[in-house]
Image (cartoon, rainbow, N blue to C red; front, side, top):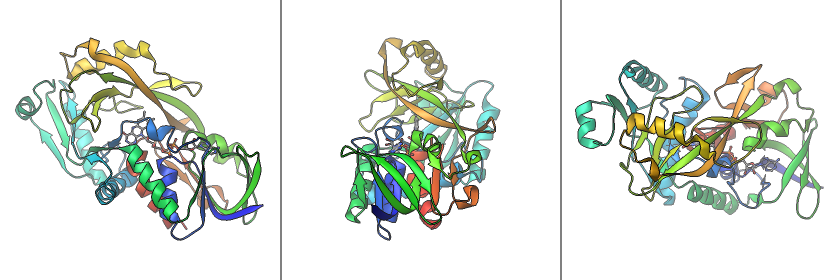
Length: 364
Ligand SMILES: Cc1cc2nc3c(=O)[nH]c(=O)nc-3n(C[C@H](O)[C@H](O)[C@H](O)COP(=O)(O)OP(=O)(O)OC[C@H]3O[C@@H](n4cnc5c(N)ncnc54)[C@H](O)[C@@H]3O)c2cc1C
């Protein structure tokens, strides 16, 4: 039977960032069920580098987003990964000014910087197409090429002898006193692998995998529900090269405009609760998209919108109550030495990936 020091389950941006962080000091094997890295959450998102505006101060999301933002810009510069610090406007309309002010306070209390309230006159000059009575400009928000980022993380992990194994699905874990026994399916058939440290970074598969983890306490497994985020793309020229967000809603950030590195605009993601994993865009949501976009872009030509792609958020519930933060469990939470679970790593997980990896390394 094969034995290694550390196994990471899942080659999304988080698993790859952890492999890169740990590989210089330990033997690392990364097991990924798909043929390539990043086929799920990490390639079905807005590629926005968030600046930590939305999350409660002292939450993991706030801390890891802010740290991750700084680490990610530096990493992109050092490694020549395409990115653009394009800035973002959070816009308020009549009757929403107080909510925008609360958001600004929350961001400052979390330690976010580079925030500037914008007047209607400034907006009229800078973004004449935009309907807003006020806005908050976040100059540390940006966009990144998530594929190039993952490619670079994978290459650096491999340069430090991390073994990246694609088409390897972990389907059972047995927790023993000082090691874990993994049952893995591969193209060559099933095999067993033993490790001392186990990091579960399986994205949408992370909480379900715990159901197949023998010795793991049942009350440590949160319920996971799925919230699809549909995107519509905009044909032709984007009205802006900034990111434009309405005020956030209870389960998402509101249907916003993001640009990609080629300068094209898309709208989304919305929030659609689904029972099964299904990446098909729900085209029947078009009217909701049109209405939401018209609130800040009244002259939108709806003919320019077309269904683009969808991603799925892993939403956690603990004792029936929504758990809105990342849930990083180590021995202190579940009592099992050597095991770390990364659960509910939805937005801003792409931004936070390098900081999550740093945090995992610091836990030993
Ligand atoms: C609609 C949407 C928009 C978003 N927008 C942004 C944004 O703009 N900015 C931002 O910072 N964040 C954003 N996010 C969040 C971000 O995409 C995620 O937090 C991040 O990609 C999570 O990465 P991950 O590695 O945890 O998950 P994943 O990328 O899903 O990786 C997990 C991997 O584990 C593998 N796996 C699962 N089970 C097993 C198993 N049993 N055995 C082996 N392998 C397994 C999967 O195949 C997968 O490759 C968004 C998310 C969504 C859904």
